[in-house]
Image (cartoon, rainbow, N blue to C red):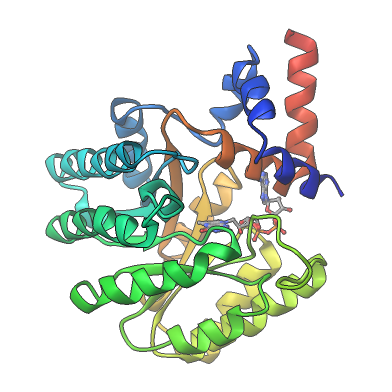
Length: 308
Ligand SMILES: Cc1cc2nc3c(=O)[nH]c(=O)nc-3n(C[C@H](O)[C@H](O)[C@H](O)COP(=O)(O)OP(=O)(O)OC[C@H]3O[C@@H](n4cnc5c(N)ncnc54)[C@H](O)[C@@H]3O)c2cc1C
C-alpha cells in the first residue's frame, strides 16, 4: 500500500526539498547511491570488479529542465567512460542511461535525447563496452524503443529495458528476442495506471515468467534484472531448458540490495552485473528504492527520528 504513496512523493518538488535537506538522509542514501563523483565511485568499481562482478553505471539525475542540463548529463557519462578507459575496465563496466536525463521530456526531446546519447554509445563502443537504455514511465517508451532501434543500426549491441508490469511488454519481448539484442527484464518501478499495467504482485510475477520464457527461447541476450529468489531460480531453469550456456544470459541486481546473492551467483559461474548509481541528483532513484520495500522507509524514518 505504501509503495504508490512513496512513488507519488517522488514526483513532488516539496518532498524533494524536504527529504534532500534532512540531515540524516545522506547516510541512508549511501546504501543505494555510494558516491557523488567519479572519484568516489572509482574505488567501488575496482572493488566490485576485483570480486568477479561486472557493473552497469547510472549517473543519477532524471528530472532535468534545460537542454544545458542534458548536455551536462552526456558529458558526465563521457567523463566516466574516459576514466574506465584509463583503468582498463571498459569491458567489465557498461552504462545504463535514462533518456529523460538526456532531454527526452524537453521540447524536441526525442531528437535531443538521441543526439545526446549517441556520443555516449560511440564512446562506450570505443572502449569495448555497451549502453543500455533504462525504461522509465510508460509514456516515454515509444520514444525510447525508437531511439533504441536507431542506435542499433550502428551499434547493434545497445541494450534496452522492458518492464513486466506493463501489458504491452509481452509483445515488445517477442519483437526484441532476436539475434544480437540485449534486453534487461525488470518488474517495473514507476507508478502506472491500471489501464496499462498489472497492479498485483502475483500478476506481475506471472507476467515476468512468461516474458522471461520468450527471451530465453529467443535469439537475443537476456539480462535478468531482479532480486527475487523465486524468479532467479526460474531463470536458471528456463536458461537450462533453452540450452543456454552460462555466458548466454546474465543476472543484474542493484548496488546495496542482496549483496551476498551477487557474490553467490558470480561464484556459481554466472555473469553477475551490479547496477551502480552515483551522482548528486539522487532523489528519484532513492525514492523508487524506498517504494520497493516498505522496510527501507521504516528504517529511513527511524533514523530521522533518532538523529533528528
Ligand atoms: C539491474 C536492475 C535494473 C533496473 N532497471 C530498471 C528500469 O530501467 N526501469 C524500471 O522501471 N525498473 C528498473 N529496475 C527496478 C525493478 O523494476 C524493480 O522495481 C526492482 O528490481 C524490485 O523488484 P524485484 O524484481 O527485485 O522483486 P521484489 O519482489 O520487489 O523484491 C524481491 C526481494 O528483493 C529485495 N529487494 C527488492 N527491492 C529492494 C529494495 N529497494 N531494498 C531492499 N531490498 C529490496 C527484497 O528482499 C525483496 O523481498 C531495475 C532493477 C534492477 C535489479
